[in-house]
Amino acid sequence: MKKISILVAILSLLTLPLLAGRYAGDFMMIGAGVRALSMGGAFAALADDGSAIYWNSGGLAQIKDSEVSAMHAFLYGNLASYDHLSYVQPLPNDVSIAFNVTRLTVNEIPRFDESHLIGTNVDQRINDSASHLPGIPDGHFRSTDDLYQFAFAKNIKFGANMGWQFFEVPFELGLGGNVKFIKRKIMDNLGSGTGLDVGLKLRTDLAVIMDVDELGDLHFGLNFQDIAGTTVSWDTDSEIKDEILFNTKVGTAIVQPIDKWKSTFTLAYDYDYVYKGTSHYGVDWSYDNKANLRLGYYNANFSCGAGVKLYGVNLDYALITNPIGISNRVGLRVSF
Image (tube, rainbow, N blue to C red):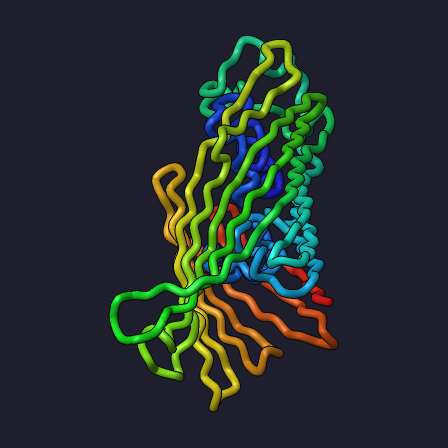
């Protein structure tokens, strides 16, 4: 019974786009990158690995090495899977390009014959035992949601005279954008759409600003998702079109090295403006650039994770709570 209840909850989330267009892109809000998600999704200001194509494409320009990253998530008691694969390639003149593929798959969704629905409405099927759907479905189907992203980013270095003392404050400004292609399938129905994200990331040196050598870096991030309006069109008889809501992500982070402990502490905060707004908080502790512990919080959900670097390969794990249950995510990142 628990399995069926979870499947019904998942199905409700998947079919909301067919009923109310405002939720059409919610599968994309699951997020990408184990490291970012273990920090509660507070990553718009950091955006310094392959998942930046999702969190803030401006951060791609500040990645110095080629990188391949991948993630697999076990969702809803392993009834659904979520996979993410990205590649970042720096080019001359502080330019980077990137590619990303993301897929959400839900298997074994129960299907009931239409005869069970004739003469009843949703309220009756919930509240009237005589109208309940039978315990044994007439069959099962699978749902898939695919996201393809292509990104371009440019890093600009400059100094700013802040008007006090006799020095310039160094800044790095990453500007980026990505084009996204969305493909959705529920039973025999197909939906597709195209969207655009634009992001910027600003980094500066607190040691120079405050004239304290021990201080680290300060990061700001701004990401506009679906800035031009994104519509998913379905091949149903009614030719339904769902609009994905425009979202703005704003973030800030402090990356503070502590040399005597061979450690680096990162504190990050993000705010999403979509719907009623959501705050994201994240902490990362890195030891000797070989091991990490992470914590995160957002919207009454907690997350935690760990990472190790072995032979140049970063292995990451995250545990994330949500109203449906606990999900586990594993990933790897390879730089070369």
